[in-house]
Image 1 (cartoon, one colour):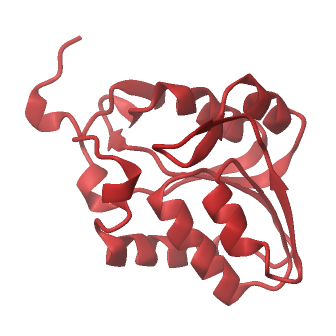
Image 2 (cartoon, rainbow, N blue to C red; image 1 turned 90 degrees about the vertical axis):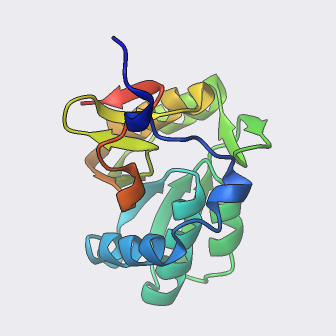
Length: 169
């Protein structure tokens, strides 16, 4: 169906999103960290909020296993002594600074985590959870499949908007 433009979330490149709504992303990340326990095995999606979450995890935890398709998240977390990191690999998308494709998805499907943290482009009660980057859609779906629990993090600018692609209801 058709969606009015005012409900369509504007897509911006990662380089722009890194500086947008930073304080909200920080608060979201702190709340998400409240759902994580020491020693957890988690998966972290890519994106600007993922980078903020990685910083919060560095500050609050000593022992975690973290799976990610984001080299930036990996880079932020590898110095932490008690963190075990799993980088998915795959085809690299420079604009989103993330791995994607069948190699990434196959790697994820061979793993299990207690929680996956995903950062969608839009959330609407009517249209569901939306994203814009086709290459990352299957990665995010795989992140959801491998987890006991999925946690969506989205700042208020993404509420009651739609993305070009539906991730889930």
